[in-house]
Image 1 (tube, rainbow, N blue to C red):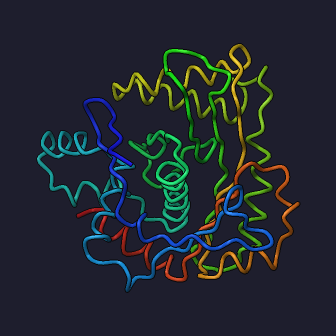
Image 2: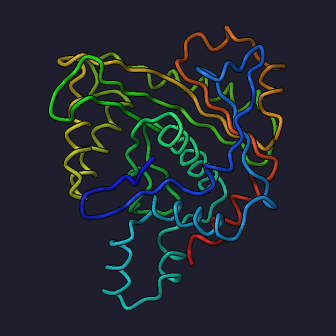
Length: 282
């Protein structure tokens, strides 16, 4: 896919690591349509170029390029010093949760062909405090200027367990918390999803991204202008046998209430996380 551009601000290219993902073959649970499993590359399979590109991709979620240049110029501070002190989280729990959401966002955008707003993690007041609300959303719209009933919003609850290969635990947690995103359209503004759509609408306006802002407004008015809303989960665990473990731990019908199940396994995911976040400040 081509570059995704926030007008006048940030270009988003497909990160190089995506080409290194291995999709697991179907089994009695994984159908490769609704339920998909992928394996992350091992450390030894990632060149320096891939790792540097991956770290840059993660860093851009926290502060866009132009904003970073502006801040360090205004404050006469080194880029690495500013990123380390004020931008990139250093609590393991925060890093793991953020990284998991970014991985699932990349799957949605670059493999599932949804558009994903990339504003949730940027410009935090506290670098270690995650934004509340829905973890990841993606959308497909026929025309941002119209309200087509076929417009689609996908809502994903993400759980990451980078220190363990226990697929059952991480998937079950994601399934349980996914219920919090279910929305009564008549009370959209009071829901967790509504709060996230409102936040993304305001944040995209702040960055001059009028297209995303209009689309978020469209989904905030889903009761008035019908659309398709789908619900799913993303699960990340430290194993290279995610599809095998899913098959052993779950039955296909356990996922009946979900429209999309995305599972990422990687035996080196903890080390990948450490190295990528160490490189984020460079």
